[in-house]
Amino acid sequence: MNRREFVKVSARWAACAVSGMALPNGFLKNAFAQKEDMMTDIDGLLHAMEMKDSAETDRRLKKLYDEGYDAWEIHLLLFPTVQRVLNPPFINPHLPKMYAINRELKSYLKKDDIPPMVRFEVMEYTRRSKLEKLKKTGLLKHTVSFLEIESAISEKDKEKTATLIATFHAQSGEEELSRRLLLLGSGYLSNSLGHSISCTAFILQEMWVRKKEDLWPAFTTLADYFCKGKFQHTPVPETSHDTIADDPVPSMLLQTTKGGGIVNLHHTITLYAMERVRHLFDEQEYGHMLRALVSFMGEKDVMQPEINVPGATHPEDYSSFYETYSELDAKTVTAIAKGMITSSQGRRLLGRFLIKSLCKAYQGDYDPHYVTGLGSALWAVDRYWNRDSVAVNALYQYLDYLFEGLRKSN
Figure 1: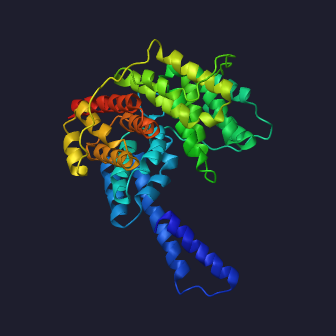
Figure 2: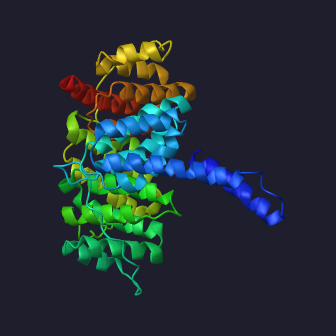
C-alpha cells in the first residue's frame, strides 16, 4: 500500500465512523498493518542509505519494488534524508537540487520508467556522506528580521541560522523567505559558480510543495550552505532606467550556452533556476538578478548556433534512440533531437528518451550535473523549441558535457 492508498483507506474508515456504518471485518487492522509494514521497509532503506551501504540499499529497494510499492511514493519519502546528502569536496547542496529537479523530469515519464530513475538517485544518495543532523528547536517568540539571519550566518552559527530561518518562514511566509534568500544569494554567484541561486531555488521549490510537512531538514541544509559559503550580505539592487525586454531569456540563453565544460553549463543551470523563481521578484529585482548573472558570466557575446545540423529522422522507438545515444556523440544525438522538438509530442518523447537513456547508462557513479543539466536543457527546449539556435545550443551544451563525462568513466 502506498501513501496515497493509505490516505484513501483512512478516509473510508473515517467516513464509516462518522456515519455510524460498521467497518468491514479486519479492515482497520489490515490497513494499518500494511502501512506499518511499509514504513518499516522504508526505515530500513533509509538506514542503509545513512550507513552508505550500497549493496543493502539496492537489496531493500528491490524488495520494495517486488512487493509492489510505488516508486514515486518511495522518492517522496526520501525528502528528510536527501536534504542532508553532501557532495565533498564541494560545499554546494547538489543532491538536494537534483532531487527537486527529478520532480520536473518525472512529468516526461511513464509509470514503468520511474523505478530506474528512483534507483539511480537512491544509489547516488547512498554512496555520499550526509550532513550531521541538527537538533530541532522551537520557533522564536520575537519577530525575526532578515538582518538577524544574515548576522547568524556571519557568525557561522548553523543552529541559530536554521532556527531563525524556520521562524522567519513561519512569520513572513514561504515567498518572502524565498525572495530574501535568493536576493542574498545573488551577491555570490561568482564565488559559488551560480549555486547560491541554483541550489537555493530548487531546495525552496521542493519546500513549496510540502506545506504540511516538517521542513526542518531543508532549513538546516540552507543554514549549513549559507554559513559555509559566507553568504551574509544582501546586495542592494541597483536602480536602472534600462527597460527589460518582454522576454530577455532567449538572448541570455544564447550567451549562457556559449562554450562547453562545467563553468558554461552552470551559466545555463543558473538561468534555468532564476526563471523558475522569477515570480517572486518585482521588475527592479528581476533586472538585478539578470545583471548578476551577466557579471557572473563575464565577457560572453551572443553567439550563433554552435552546431548547425539538419534535423535527423525520428527514431522508430526507444531502442533505436538508445543505440545512437550509447555512441556518445553529441552532434548526432542533437541532430536527432532537432527533428523531434517541432511537435509537443516529439518534445515529450525526447525528454522521456533522454531520461531513460541516462538511467540505463548508469554504472554506479554519476555527476549530479548530468541530471541538473538535463533539467535545464529540457526547460530550454520546452520553452523555446521554435527558436532553433536557443533550443539546439542548450541541448548540445548539455550532451557534450554529459558524453565527455561518460566516456571518461567507461
